[in-house]
Image 1 (cartoon, protein in one colour):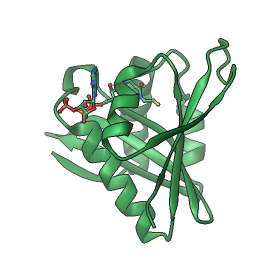
Image 2: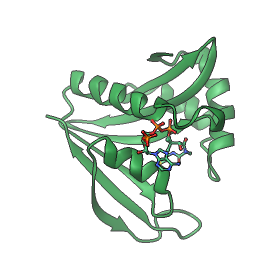
Image 3: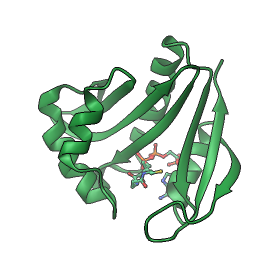
Image 4: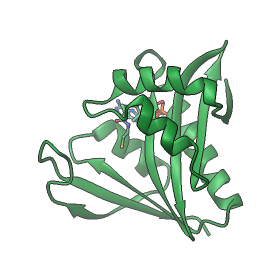
Length: 144
Ligand SMILES: CC(C)(COP(=O)(O)OP(=O)(O)OC[C@H]1O[C@@H](n2cnc3c(N)ncnc32)[C@H](O)[C@@H]1OP(=O)(O)O)[C@@H](O)C(=O)NCCC(=O)NCCS
């Protein structure tokens, strides 16, 4: 498995994976727009030319939001998510980020367990954060 930055050509495959992984996926357009922002740090895991997973951070000063992370259903529980999260954290540190935060659906136990294992802690709940009315748990991690 290789982890590297996305290229513009990867966005099509990433958008397809996004569709397969979320009820409220980012569209190709949203992903492409975000990709071109200087504040975005976008990494993906590849194997044999196939995208196994991807994630991106949006950096604002000394903080960064883990805006998206997902792994293809047939590649889960192999450490891909953990490797991506670690690589995103290292890339954020190299940009001078001192604190990471993210929102996760309160029903999303696999993601919460991944983040807890990665050193994040639950901070507070954002009631009805998602369009369908579900609450988000905000999790944070100090990295600098
Ligand atoms: C959350 C997600 C990214 C995890 O990716 P992954 O590659 O399967 O995660 P890893 O294999 O690196 O797992 C790391 C650890 O997280 C925890 N974990 C991950 N998935 C889990 C699950 N389904 N059940 C229980 N624990 C889980 C475990 O502690 C795991 O370590 P272990 O396998 O040694 O027990 C993946 O399930 C996914 O893409 N989900 C859909 C998209 C999503 O919800 N993204 C997060 C949005 S906030």
